[in-house]
Length: 426
Image 1 (cartoon, rainbow, N blue to C red):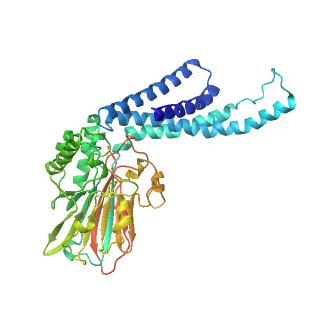
Image 2 (cartoon, rainbow, N blue to C red):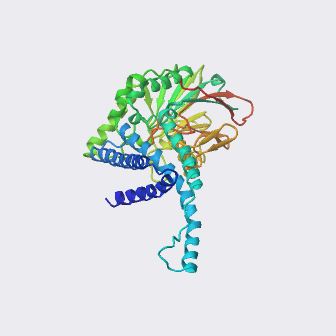
Image 3 (cartoon, helix red, strand yellow):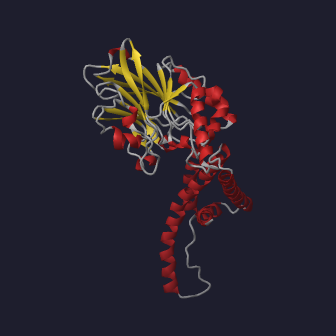
C-alpha cells in the first residue's frame, strides 16, 4: 500500500507541474478538462490492470502491457517537461526572494515573475517527441522485424561446416502477444523461414510466466523449419519465478508443461546438455545451459555438466540466455567457446542505432554486452535484441531481431564482418 501511495504521489506531482505549461499555452477550459481526464483514466487503468495480474497470479498480460505502455507514453513526456518548467522556476525563485526583501511585504505585490509562455511552448514541443515515439513503438515498432546478418570466420572450423548458416531468435514472450496482431507475428515467423538456415536456435524466454501463454501460438511457431533441426534453452522468465503459485507442485507442473510445449514445437530443449552436429564425418558441439544471470537472476546454468564428454579442441556453439554469463564465466572458462548466443536484454526496447555510427540504449548501464556481436580472445558473443517484448508493448529504435550467422573457415581468425540487412514490415 505504501508503494502505491508513493507512486501515485510522484505521478500527481509530475502531472501538476506539467499542467503549468499546458495552462500557460492554452486557457481553454476544455483542453484542461481533457488533460486531467486522460491522466486520471490512464492512472486508474494501470492500477486496475496491475491489480488483476497480481490477484490472479498471471503476471504481465497484453492488457497489463497496454496499460504500462500508455502510462509511459504520457508520463515520460511530462517528466521531460519538468526540465523546462522546473528549470524556469529555479530562476524565478531567487527573483521572488529578492523582490520580497527589497520591496517589502506588501500584499499587492506579486513577487514571482510571470512564467514565460515561450518556455512552456518549448516544453510542450519537446514532450511531443517521446510521446510520438512511444506511441509509434506500440503500434508499429514492436513488429518492425529486422534481419541482421553476420559472417564469423574461424581457422579451426571443420571444413564441412564452411558456409553453415544459423538463425538465432530469442525472447518470444508469447504472453505479451495480442491476437489482433496475429498476422504481423506470422509475418515474423515467415521472415525467419525465409532465411533458409541450416539450423534454428532459440535462446530462451518463450513465455512471460506460464506455459499456457504459448498455447494460442503453437500453430504459428510450429511452422518454423530448418533442415538440421531446431534447438532451444530456457530463459529467466520460463521458470515462472515472477508470479505466485498455489504450491510448489503447481509450479513444477507448469515447468513440465513448458517442456511439453517445446516438444510440440519440435524444439530440442537443452537443459545443461549438448548435441553433436555431424556433417560429412566432421562435428561441432551445440551446448545449451539453463539460465545463469548476475544481479539476482537464477543461476541454474552448469557449464561443466553441459560439456561432459566434449573434447577441448572441439568446435563449440553455446546457447546461454543471459549475456552476463558470458562475461562472468564463459569467456574465461578452461574450454574455448567459439560462439555464445544470448538474448535477455531486449536492448531495453528503446535506444538509437545507426549501423556503423551509433549504438546506444540505457540498458548499457546495466549490461556491458547488450546487443549485437562482441569478440574477446577469439571467442564471439551475439546478444539478440529479441523477437517479442515485455512490459512496454513496443519498441523505439531497438527493433525486434532475427539474427543470421554464417560460419566461415579461414586460415587465420579475423574479426567479424558485419552485414546489416533490414527487412521492413509491410
